[in-house]
Image 1 (tube, rainbow, N blue to C red):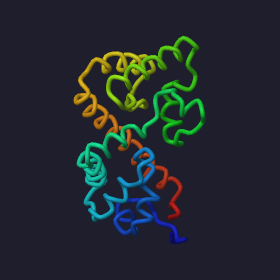
Image 2 (image 1 turned 180 degrees about the horizontal axis):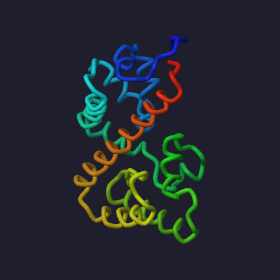
Image 3 (image 1 turned 60 degrees about the vertical axis):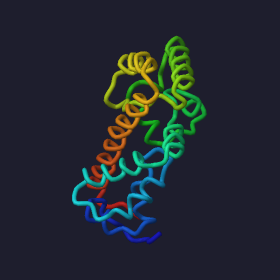
Image 4 (image 1 turned 30 degrees about the vertical axis):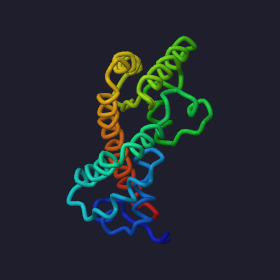
Length: 184
């Protein structure tokens, strides 16, 4: 990767080579740099909204098996990855913001049960934009969404991923603005 600094804004993103673009935006889609790599070829983007929508379209248009693998790449809420310390920094911060890193033993037992039941029914982990929800709302959503059809839940998961990733992009750009530049 080049050693010079890019100001992380839309103009800089549009000007980046593929590796720099993936380095800058790859982490916004959980463990899936292929999303940014594919979206890079769709530049230039007129707006941040257009960039984000293009990245979401990459996921939406992925073959079913790849889309399912993408969904399965997301960590369970307060699940194995959290316990093992293997979640991405973004997920750690997001889950922590909702108090999922400080559950009582009863809450931990319940969330583990809900994670298991949801995954058994739908084949992928429960996904929600936790920064937009309280702990109570998350538990209620897990209970109610488990009963939905898997097709409806796949759509709901992709909608939630849209909220999560837009928040991550906005945070990344705000961080760049306050720090001045991002090294690519």
